[in-house]
Amino acid sequence: MHTKIWRMAPQELDIKMLQEAAQLLKEGEVIGFPTETVYGLGADALNPEGVKKIFAAKGRPMDNPLIVHVCSQNQVEGLVESIPPEAVRLMKKFWPGPLTLVLPKAGIIPDIITAGLETVAVRMPSHPVALRLIELAGIPVAAPSANKSGKPSPTTAEHVWQDLQGKIAGIIDGGRAGVGVESTVLDLSCGTPTILRPGGITREQLEAEIGQVNLDTNLNDINAAPRSPGMKYTHYSPDADLIIVQGNDYEIKEKLSKILLDREPESVGVMISQEIHKLMDKDFPVDVKLKIMGTRQNMEEITSNLFDTLRWFDHQNVSVIYAESFPQDHIGAALMNRLYKAAGGKI
Ligand code: TXA
Ligand code: MG
Image (cartoon, rainbow, N blue to C red):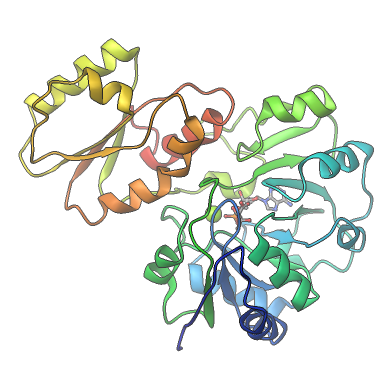
């Protein structure tokens, strides 16, 4: 299949191009498009044949449900059974934006979207391209991240191209996705609101709005069965082994220095903050593939560089990557969740 590319700046939408992409969605094709979190792979959420193509293109297990993307709060009403008061408050505060709400589903939602669950995940993205595309298509758009299943999520159209060219009808290139990790998935379908996947909106932000929010207890346990089906699969894996290096600054520096001393030349990658880099020997070995992800003063920047960094190492011919461990509050919760998954728990 020929994969078409449409390029535009988010501030200067090309409506003709978006109409062409929207038309393909309506015809049951799948399209890669930018959101503020990561690139999504969209299809008409109410057309099971179209949605099937998402699973085929990604190689995604059929028991992993999809998020339905909308362009307004009104659009949600037709897709869910009921909207609890907390949902109304959260939508008002955080939509459009990186927050996905799990609500009791309406009968109109096909089983293929929810993998047979009684709930549906909905989100209104804030990226102008995503919003306008959904609006022009006039349909709710089901979209997982637009990567091959198991690989790091795509933060550029180039990433989508690398994973899915020839398998999908088109990709809208709207520049780099800003947040760089996926939306927070919050279950509002029963009991205390529970974060099933930490993401762009933090637990602290949610609690400031609606009070107590739980974290799915199984989230960071590699052997447990999380309530968000997708969280059980290997995720975000670079080709090389990834190992997380924990400790205070001094310990991380000492551990890394020792690892680099004992390394096999040409095979080691390191991903660290400016702060740790400054502590390391001035003569950092030239054969080590080094990625400085940003400063810890700006955890949003480090987070937004994560997936691109993991994908960069796939082109560097390293067999093992060592990653600095970060504090797990605020956006650090989402960052470390992805890093643990990418490492398959290796610390
Ligand atoms: O930021 C994002 O959320 C991106 C962009 C494209 O919007 N999308 C995304 O989709 O990350 P995906 O498919 O990669 O992740 C969806 C997550 C999975 O962990 C899935 O199991 C969970 O949401 N999920 C979907 N529907 C659910 C439901 N009804 N109950 C519980 N978890 C659900
Ligand atoms: Mg994904």
